[in-house]
Image (tube, rainbow, N blue to C red; front, top):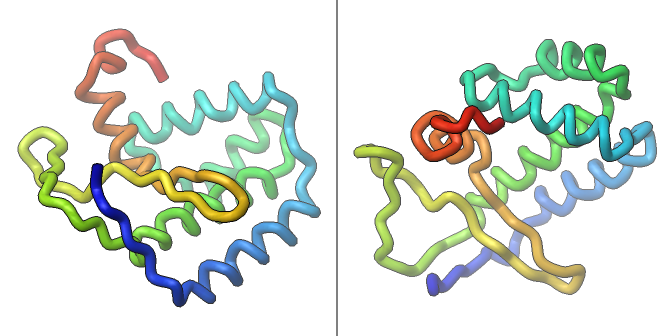
Length: 141
């Protein structure tokens, strides 16, 4: 198992988490059926290399008749998790590759007083899995 060290000085991350908490009070969340449909569409975008920018999020919200703020919140939480990679120092010698290209670790599971949470490079690794792995042969999104 790899030893993970996180930097204690993460005020900017805390500020972003507080903003996300505040933003969540303005969202009209979707039901499980809508959430599943939206996840599949997001995965399709990732598989095809389509950037999940404001225009794409607006189109997803329109297609799913949902509050675009939910998708903006998801994007904010995703960016917070990506920013956390800066504060992680993995002390091991494991080399990671996608195909022949060396890359950082896919992600980490961290814990705090609130529970455990995953920090992953979702777009990079999901795209590779969708296009190179068993999912690419089965057409799973």
